[in-house]
Image (cartoon, rainbow, N blue to C red; front, top):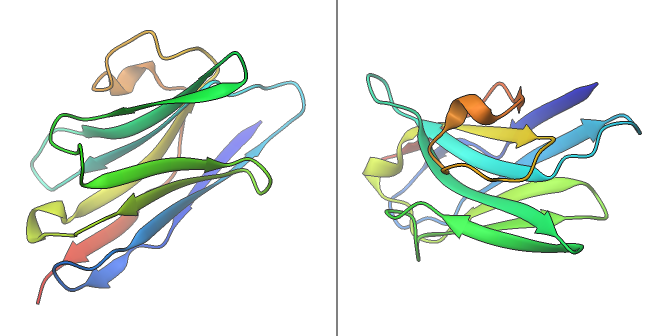
Length: 129
């Protein structure tokens, strides 16, 4: 059993630094190796934002090409949280942001949303003045 729940969304002004959080709950038999953030604007394809995966006990980070330098993904091991720190929000960042997870290593493209086994319900981020 795996449950993902996003929080931290809302209406923010341009250049704000919202921090999105995904609370991860899983049973003892499930090990999640690939954790990711996606986003989707109305009428648009779901877009991979960033992901973190684990090899040798250490996390490895990957960002979507348009996201490099604009967001930071991190994992809080103690509280089992997946965070997405937006560094400078812009109107084009307006979208529903989803947390996703997989039991398997991230051996696929960041943009292959269908590879992920578990999803949260999403949190809406609206960037406007």
